Image (cartoon, rainbow, N blue to C red; front, side, top):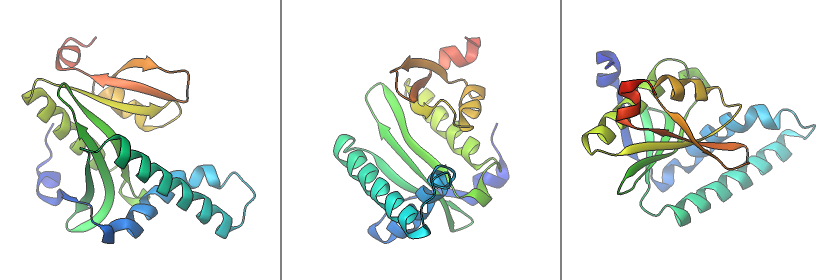
Length: 169
């Protein structure tokens, strides 16, 4: 369901090199619950997260060269990131993440619904890898994503297809 308020206040723009500090902040906010479990100093936690951020960024850019790396903006302020890889038969969502104050406000749902609508218009499926313990998994299921493959790792590939969403399969 389209939200007129979000339609007029949420937009995407391409990431630039100047966005790296912000992207690191978003990444840190996602990893913070994990790193808070270890008895490291703040400096050690930041160094670890920076190395993981750089590794992920390098991996995404080398393995998914056609990815759209985008900043999510709300009323002109940067609030998150969205990375999508448009493939011949699928739109693959590599990552969607919002800073904590902007989570659970409908922004992620709004953007995912937009992606699913675009996939439907192109007669494509949409896919996303999700950790089994990620709270966003419930959102993906609510939007009609179904488990497609479990590789035995902590990530599960979920897939959305229009015919599945319509039939409730």
